Length: 287
Image 1 (cartoon, rainbow, N blue to C red):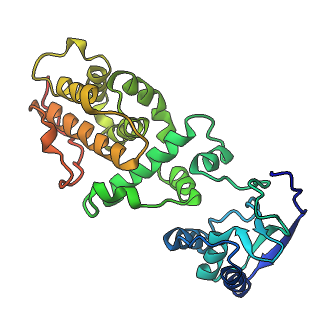
Image 2 (image 1 turned 135 degrees about the vertical axis):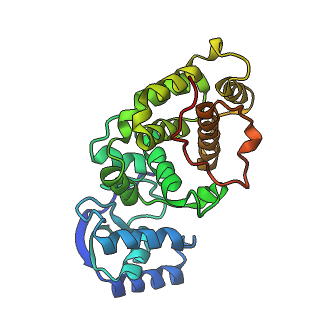
Image 3 (image 1 turned 90 degrees about the vertical axis):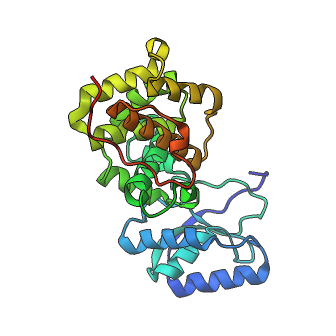
């Protein structure tokens, strides 16, 4: 912590007017010169308004010797937006060069999932929750190439897992197996493994056969869509962490499933950046 001692933490309710005053004072002092990400602040404010903000487990607001905020800028802006007074732990007189302070609230979505008891693969599960939600809610309205700019708060990710996708972690073993053969991103693999069983649970045997071909493609015949998809991933499907990459790979896997299900060939050009994310075919025509 740069050799500086932190002050003790005190609890205090911050009203919207007080939050605004601190923000105005901070801008005047220049102690925290970086701008506020208003989209992120609005999402935090939404959590506060809806009662999804965890008041009992928050990162302390950090004030410097001038009284300006040097950590907690977006939370104060969210209080102003939400018009909801909230209790915060506050650390005062903290030197500007202190790089770490006691943390009570999860800093990432993966950390937040750990708080609610998700034991393993938290980062992948968090990413898959977000990608599945985007697929289900914005597949026909927002181009998948724009999904990268969608910001999820920790509270939103936790809420989606608990209320809409509580069984998503059960698809982790399938994700691991699919990754071993296809080399798709973990998030795309988990999102597909979950979506295919969620959308078409009655097609279990066909889904298992389709996945087995992707995991072990050595015996697939020429013209099998799974063979072509596997070749695409082996030559072009480098895994990265960007959501848009996982969204692209998810669309390719779904388009391959749709082709395989009806006995048609697969071509990567059938799903491009200007196309809508494909719906999952529920009709099986293959033997």
